[in-house]
Image 1 (tube, one colour):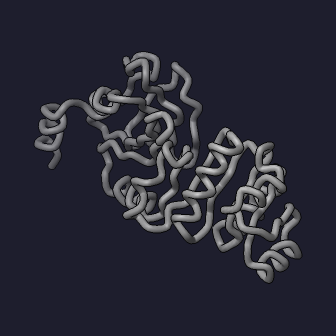
Image 2: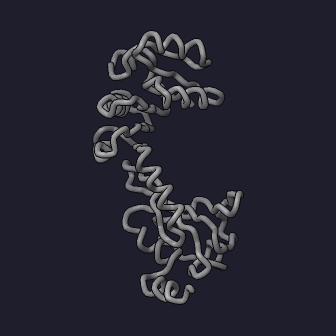
Image 3: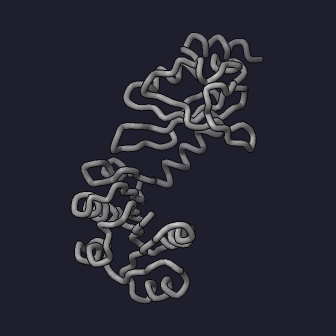
Length: 231
């Protein structure tokens, strides 16, 4: 897979170093001194140039990339990179870093962004997940399709416990993508039986989230009864 990363700061540098082992990576950095340093430290291609410039991206062959990652420390730059990647080069997958949470709403399909990654939002989701056993928590939203990755930690009173995935009766536009049990990740085949404390990850689309919540957690009356019965 060919991956272009725009921005050679801490985030871009880490991504390039991690991905270069298994992918064809090209890293863009407009600071000459930093670009030279990165070129001496990394095995991937390092391009000295402004990733917000159409000519820079074209000369490096971004049109042949499968993924573009806009990872600069400036939200405006990341939006420009995303828009160019999608509209000018038709890159299949564009991932953009969101530096300031207040700008998160801008990182959508109209700016060419397929996946927006906001560290504060991710941390918030992880904190909520850590304290929300028995609640459905959104981990990631895919702006391009309206799909969302959600997670729930099953309690002993969950209606899904001791049932197989095949018998859950999930909506057609929702599916279990993984079950994490302890330190093990279980492939969600139909015969897998869910147990208390399982972390169930589901992909939901459109208005199916409420139905998934009902299947995995129960309706509000069921939840209230379970809470009342808990000492």
